Image (cartoon, rainbow, N blue to C red; front, top):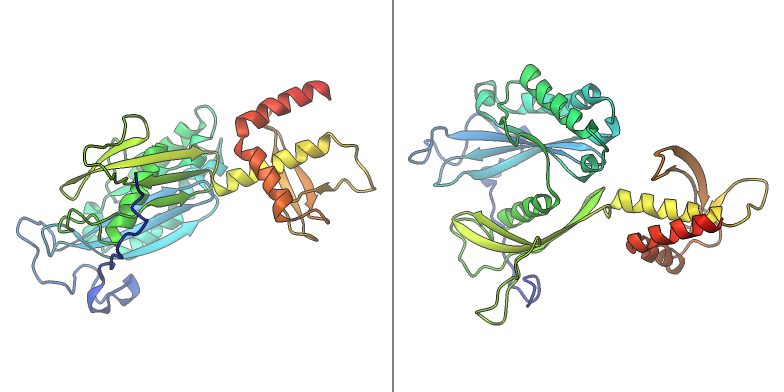
Length: 341
């Protein structure tokens, strides 16, 4: 099996933004288009918008997309982007506050989308790994509050099912794959069938995903069945993808694992000096910072001062990361060590 990003011919991205209309700020008429004067046969509107709110672990982001219907399929013109922090998961136990945190994003949509098109501009809220890690019913309470606020305060239509959801890890990666390959012109309806697609490595805050379309040296070979296999129909074609989501291995979550392991290892050693400073090899030498440690069992949080001291460096940090990557073995080790302390 070979990966599509090895020895693949370069694909020239499509220039979707003709006539120098590349943003809302340069658009002479957001309710119209410079690409044509009448919609393609069968299209009901010349221009349409779509709103996607990506509720990630570190923050929430809105993507406001403008499309035109000059051709047989909707053509992307430009995107307006805005982000707010923190993410919905930070409002655990405060669902109404979580819902209101998205107001700054939805108000941006009100600014960009012409009033005449708002009632036909769909909105979706897709939460990712950060909210998947929120315990109990608290994540469901946040989603329900977001849904109610959208219905009550904003004119954009929301699907009753699937409009505000926590995405499955496999869908999260596949949607990133679709976005990248759509913009690179490898999966459009008029793209030649033998055009190679691009692999996607999606590094989020709480999870990371890998997705690619495998190719085989033997024509009768195929991807074996399993949770890793994803059959996608897009642009009138079927793509068989390999996908996997690593929950807990996003950038921020992995950093938390590193800090927790360093703190635990320090607890096994006698404290020395007048100040309770924990040496952390994953900090640069001479760097000191206060990090928050959350106990996995009790959920209690406390601040720990960590310092790169003279031990900070790649090799020492890499040994810590290797233990974190073997997370299950690390948990067993921790439990055994705790019995000895």
